[in-house]
Length: 439
Image 1 (tube, rainbow, N blue to C red):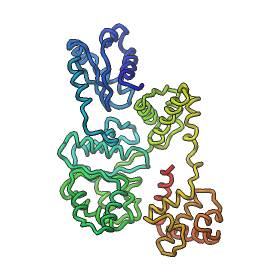
Image 2 (image 1 turned 180 degrees about the vertical axis):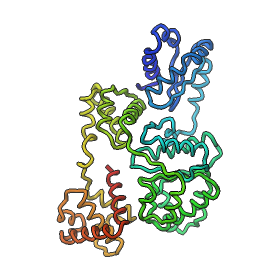
Image 3 (image 1 turned 135 degrees about the vertical axis):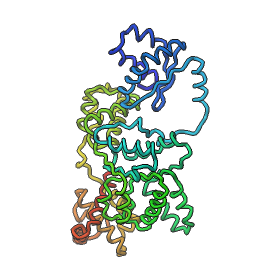
Image 4 (image 1 turned 60 degrees about the vertical axis):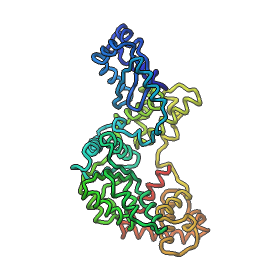
C-alpha cells in the first residue's frame, strides 16, 4: 500500500466482514482518499448529509479497521469538496520541515506486555511534567524503544504546553560539548543556562556519563537545579542505576529517587504488531505466514525488525518477487543469522576502545607507555581475543607487531583487574555493547 488510496481500499475490504457490499458501495463508493498523514487518514465526502451519516454510524468502524492495519490509532478526517481545496492549499504552503523525531509519538508506539509500564509512565510524565514521576528512569537493552518514548514525551508536551522549553540530548553529546567548552576556555555559564533553564530535560543513554568526572559534576548540579524547580527530568539507560558501578553515588541516588521503568524484548504478539506496523509504513502488506515466520525468528529488538522489513521491501522491488515465506527466507537470510556468529573486526574494536577512552586509535596501536593509553591498549587486546578468532600473534600484528607473549600479558592484566575491580567489568561490557551496536 503506497498511497492514501491504497489504504482506503484496504479499509473498505476489512469492513466487508461487518457490512454488506451494498452498504459499503452506498456510503463509501464515492468517498475519495485525499491524504495519509502520520496518524490521520483524510477523506473527501461529496455531501454534508453523507458526511453526517458516516460520522454517526460508520466512523468508529473505519478507525477500527485502520487500527487493525497499523497497530496504532489513526484518526479519520472527513472533508467536503470545498474544504478539500483549502486543505490542498494548506498542504502546499511551505513550512518548517518535520524532523525524524516528530514521527516518534505515543500513537505510533506499539504497546505490548513487555513495555506497557514504561509506556504508561511516559504518557503520565508528558501529561503532568514535574509531577509524581520525577525523574523517570527508563532502562532496557538497545533497540527496544527507549528513544522513541523520549521523543514521544517531547512531542506530547509540545502539544499540551506549547510554551514549554524542552531539551533532548544524548549523553555523549553532553559530554563532548562540555569537553569542547573546557578545552576552548569558553565561559561555562552559557552551557549551564542551556541545560538548566528548561521545563523538560530528556537525556538518552545516560550510562555513558559514568566514570567521566567533569560530566558527572555538571549533570549532578543540572539535576539539582531542575529538580528543585520541579522541572521534569527523564533519563534512558541500558541498565538500572544500581548496575552503573562507575557512577558517583550521589548521582546514582538521584536516579533512583524517581520512578524506574524497564523495557524487555517484545513478546511474539508485539513482534507481529511491530512487523505489521513497520511494513505498512513502508507501503507493503505482509501476509500472515510471513508475519509469523519473521516474528518467530527475529526476537531481539525493534531495529532488527525494521531491518527485516527494509530487506524484504528491497528484495521485492529489485527482484520483483512475490512476498511469501520462501521469498522472505531468501531476503533475510543474513539477518536471521545467529548473532553470536558475527565476528567484528579488530579495527572496529580498536575504534570503539579509542572512543570510550577519548583517544586516537593510532595512540592505542602505537608505542606510548602512558598509563591511560596502556590500559586502553590492554582492554583492546582483551576484547579482540574475546570477540574474534584471531591468534595472539595476529592480535600483536594489530598493535605494531607486538610479540604474542606481550599480548598474553596484557590480556592477563585485564582479567586480574576484572576480578578485583568491578568497574573494569563494566568498562568491558560498555565497549562490547558498542561493538555489537556497530553491527
